[in-house]
Image (cartoon, rainbow, N blue to C red; front, side, top):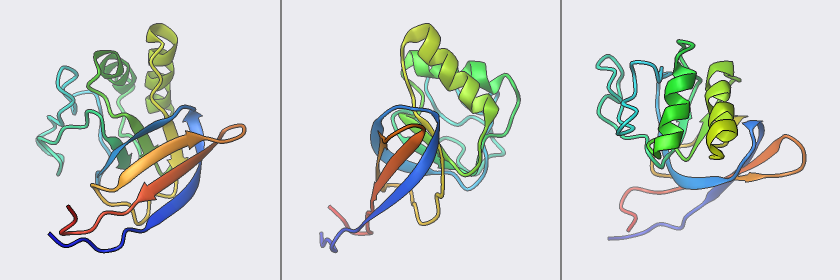
Length: 152
């Protein structure tokens, strides 16, 4: 298979929960509710009305516009983090207190930290390699290694 030169993007973001993570990007075109939308045992999207129905979030860096309620989403996210079926990290375009509570609770109760970052997500596509790293204060550095069709 041919491979084009890879390129990378660097973004700054603001942590809702600081931490480091890396993994393949998984870009959702629509917001997702973890409550009723994600199987906590598998990390798979189970909301039949969501365009990404059947997709596994486990271990990916989830990229989406934001969360979509309900307040119970925080408990589902915290449990998925505990079980190891949650995304490795989440990038969202606007702050989401419900997702933040779930990530904070998992950190507090289980000592497992999943970074949640508010940043510009334009140009990120599923399959890009994403690295989230902490900078000073509440700043995050997001490195995105672009992937191309036909890449090995």
